[in-house]
Structure formats: C-alpha cells, structure tokens
Image: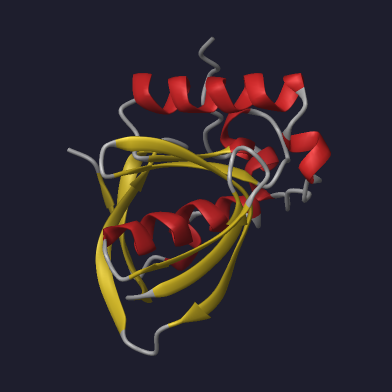
Length: 154
C-alpha cells in the first residue's frame, strides 16, 4: 500500500516523533507500516523517508543503502565529525524547493533494525547526509530550517 506524502506547510511535519519499543516494532501493525514506508519511498523515487512524512509520529526511517531499502527504528546519532560538508538537499515533503545544507561529513548511528536488533553504523558517505536529513524529520525539522540557500526546483 502506498500512502500520500505529507507536504509543507502541514504542521504535522513540525512535531517530534515518539520512540517505539522492540515489542511495538515487531507488531503486525508496525511491520506492515514499514513495508508501506519502503513501497511509498520507492514509488515516490526517494532515497529516504521518515514515518511522519506518511502520517505516523513513530521514530522510524527508511533509507536506501547500496540499492537496498532498510528500516531503522529509534535512530540516534552518537558521534558527529567536526568536518562538515555542504550538499544540495531535496525532500518529498518539500516538493518545490532544494537547498544547500551544511552537515557533519561523518556520523556514528545507533538504531534498532527491522527485527528489533541493536545496530551501529559508521558512515562518511552520502548515507551520512541521508540519515541526518531523515532523523531531522523525526525531530520536526525540515531541510529548509537548516538551509543556507533555498532554491526553487526548475
């Protein structure tokens, strides 16, 4: 099932999402929602999607890494590099704009995988930018809140 992506200026996107337990993550409702997140992300040609973008304030994100969509629950950045990079970012929830955003180049992330297992990821690839962007959604932050320059999509 595909769900519509919530877009700005909907205030739903500005609210902080709630952590979920391992038991909740393993429930049929949330597992089906995870499938929906991945399907919606793929149909919309996204590389990342956060639960609030399709109507749930759960701390769950989907990120495509090496061509494979993965689910991360309760993601938390535990380490950020001092070195920063600027990238042009876009967002399914902000369909008419892109922006230049400066973020740490490398991060360490801890989360639960889809099965409720603890995981830690260290990345200094474009994945680091994607994770930071999606985790911002869980905190009610859009890339436009961080952008140094915002441009219309032509």
